[in-house]
Amino acid sequence: MSDKQFELTPDVVTNLDLGRILREAENLDDFLYQTRLRTPGSNIRMPKTTHALEDVAKTNGFSLMDAAHRKHLIGHLRNLKTNAPKIHISFAVEPPPAIVQKIVIWMRRNIQKDLVVEVGVQPTISVGCVVRTTNKVFDMSLRHRFFDSKRELSKLLENTK
Image 1 (cartoon, helix red, strand yellow):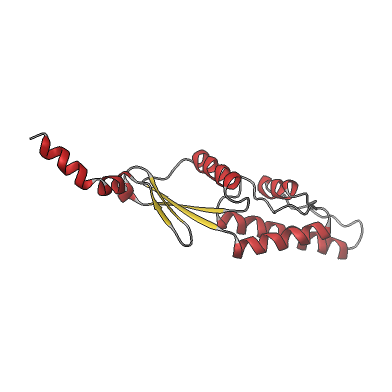
Image 2 (image 1 turned 180 degrees about the vertical axis):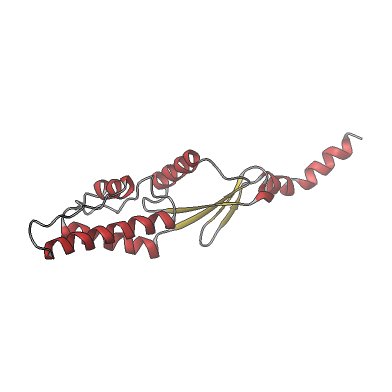
């Protein structure tokens, strides 16, 4: 376990993804606790873990087999579930997952390592995107650009007549 800032991996994009790996970590912790209470030699079937949970644990220096590490990991995940900084990005159409992942990687590298991104679809955007934080809206759509340039476009159109 290290003292660096908790970091999410590119596999964990949304708050839903975060909740999924939190439940998975809690289920693993419950299972491993219960195995200590069972009779030695009884057949048990270890639950499978996803790469997302394994990568988050490895990136942050946690061992999923160590009870103290799991406790700290679950604590960090619970804290992020309620307190992680969130950004919502709306596109005209559903973007491919690879593009979303590249955006998330860039944001976590340049803004904050534990940022959660929600992606939405808003057909009125047409081209570009709209980014919302808790207190700001950045409209980078072509529609907004045309609206801002309306007076200039009108002058140009009048001059071409």
